[in-house]
Image (cartoon, rainbow, N blue to C red; front, side):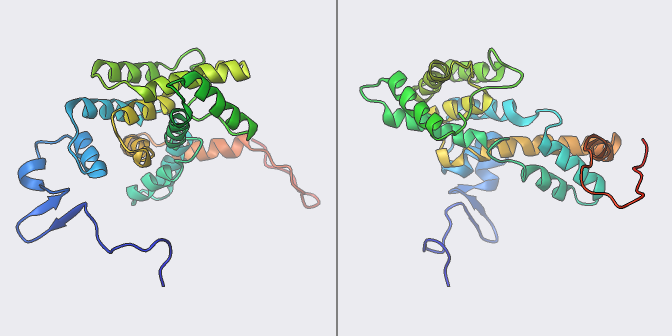
Length: 268
């Protein structure tokens, strides 16, 4: 019994024999190890092609921009999981990665689809009109504008500005970046709210202009955040705060359910 679409039972990513390991058509030991950076190798794995210097620089900038973000929920989950099971760092990293959803980290893919929708709706290159149309659709459906707005960086997200600048520097800024900017303007004109382009919106804008596939966008913040999670878990070994985070949550959350007769809450 098959579930999902039928396909040939093959893969084009890697193979090996006793003497040679092949990755995307390249001899791993002779052509890749020591010659490609991890960023370049990631691009090769995803697309099947080695990136140009400009493409690698844009991807590298995106990975650096989103890797570390403080004690966000995914990091807290990882550190608390590690505190409970320090013998399995992989489990703690997985706990953090499982928190990559539509609100945190997964926004880049959703923002990419928003940007692509603007380009698909643009007639005669009128990005502003297309951005208005797409944004009105989102608002009518009560959908959030992915990749726009930030609780701290209200006037401008410095990471977004820097990513757009890097794309300009290497000559890869194009229609997707322009559509992302048009979206920012349209959202303001429709809602009256200054929802600035944030880093999760800038990442798909510059990567799509660099010809990175839309379907691979979610993997970029996942890869980047995995590096940061490992850093937090290494720190957790010498400066543990996992149980402190757990305790703080218990202290902060009050109980409002029924109580048995005579129960007196523990005083803190």
